[in-house]
Structure formats: structure tokens, C-alpha cells
Length: 311
Image (cartoon, rainbow, N blue to C red):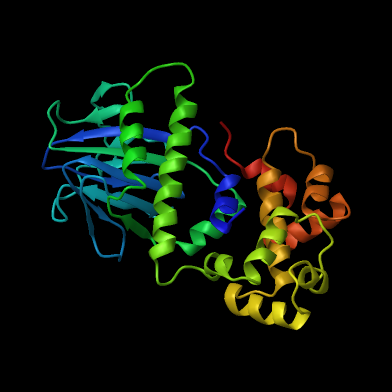
């Protein structure tokens, strides 16, 4: 598996909040839902996305904006339009003073202020994330905008059609389409970014790339730097030097953080036991995993589970 696929394979959308917004100017929404990640895509018209100190970005038809939370952001017809409504963590809509604003629903998962809108958006909000996606989120700027291209266009068209459907299993369909749109957009961004994280760029290295894939796909193996170097047919010194230079961590340091990030996700799966997760990620006992987990995250596996969102 490649690094981006590994990071997105575990924490997939589960019950994501997917909505079509039909809007006629003037309009502006301040979003303070504390979500770790939101996708805003333009079907028709245009919008501006405003995220803190980042420069406002205009998004046009086919463009996809990826907003990294949990800080608030705004979407508006114009950067100068004052926010008219606030969306909170329960997806409740109020005025900025806290007075409830009745949502104007125009069909299944369709909200807005016009039946003949100048702008149509599709938004998808990831309500929670696991530790593996925290590594991904740490590599992203506050706002990523992908311009319309051949990779995201068909997915966005499909999602825009499906969001208004009401059939059995529709939530699962929307979750998977949202994942596909996100992965397509992030892959395009990582490929083009000048400052892509080391672990992503390292995937193309003929020595470090195979080593990364072995660590990611076989974390339970009792790796050492020497055994990993032998597996990729290079010397221990060469692997250690090139791996550290590209990934900014030595091989065994990367393996430790990968194992614990993976454990954090696996612990949230229904029916998972600490013993089974420990075996899966290469720890000899539940106690050893629990101790390492607490050192890394400052919380126990039990507390990690208890704090996870449900639903």
C-alpha cells in the first residue's frame, strides 16, 4: 500500500454529514462544528472559503476545498458579506447571537434560501477521526483548494446526484463517495505540492519506499534496522541515512509511531480486544501496548475508547 492509501484506509467516513446547499446572494455561513475535516465542492456558481489567517480562496464549478478543523471557518458569496448564521457542533443553525434559525429544507439533504440558486454546493463533514488520520491532518495546511480536474470531476458529479436520493443504504453510498472525492483531491494536492511531507515523497525512493511499505503492511513483524535493510537489499547504514533524511524519523522510530497510530484506530473497531490489537501491531502483550500507548498519547487505551464518538 502507498502512504496515502494507508492513512485513509482505517478512518473512513462513517455517518458523515453530507448536504447540498442551494444559495442565492447575499449569503454567508460561519461554521464552528469542531469537525476535523470538511470537504466543500462547488457544483454551480462560486463561493469564497475563509479560514482564519489564510488568504480567502474563491472556489468555482468543479473546485474542491478541503478544510482542516477544528477551528471555525466561513463560506460566503463574497469575502465582505457578514455571516448571517452559525453552524455548531450539532449541525444546529443559529444567528451569531445564538437565536435558533429554522433551517429551510428543500428536499432530502438539500438546504438553502432559493429554489433557483445561483450557487450550488455539496459539503461533506467528517465528524471524527482516528490516530492515523491525525498524521494526515498534521501534513495538511488549514485550507487546500483543488481546482477542477479530470480526477475529481466525475466523483463530484456522482456525489451531487446521489445526495438527493432516498434509497436503502444511501448513507453508506454517500460515505464512500465522499471518501473517494477526498482521496482524489488529496492525491492531486500531494502530487503537486512543493512541501509534501517526507513520508509521502519517500514512497518514490527506490530504497525508502519499499521499506516504508514493509513497515506499514507488516507492523507485527519484529523488525530491526538490520533486518529491514536486508529485506530491501541495502546496507543498514544506507537505509538509516536515507530513511531519516526523507521521512525525518529513523526507521524504528517511524515503526513505533506507526504501530501506536494503527493501534489507536484498531481499538475503536467493534469487538476488538487489547490483546488482539497488541498482536496485530507487534507488541508482545496487552500490558506492553498499554504502557507504550499511554506514553505516546497521554491516555490509556481504555480512556481512548471511552472518549471516541459513537454512532
